[in-house]
Image (tube, rainbow, N blue to C red; front, side, top):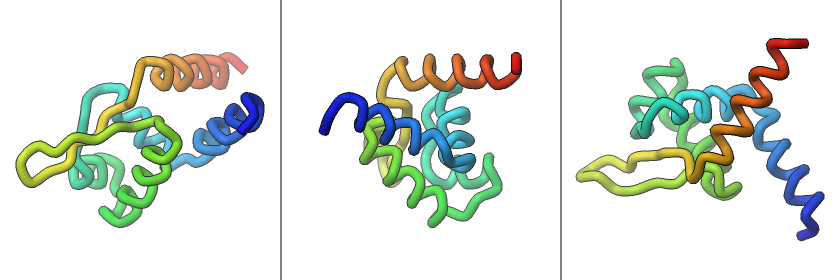
Length: 92
């Protein structure tokens, strides 16, 4: 996949409000699916579906902690990209 194609794919991931809400939440700290669902008033299945898309795009990572799978942002680039886009949107 060409670099520009990868960039387009990344911005498509960011083009969904549910995924952006999850990213915004994960900027603060890591969460399990149920905690994300509760915080964002979403069903567990919707959250799981969006997290799968975010994992496939290398935006989030997961680790097992007892019975729960905890999700966090994969790296600081995602946080920076989100914050820059958010700041830009608020200035316009």
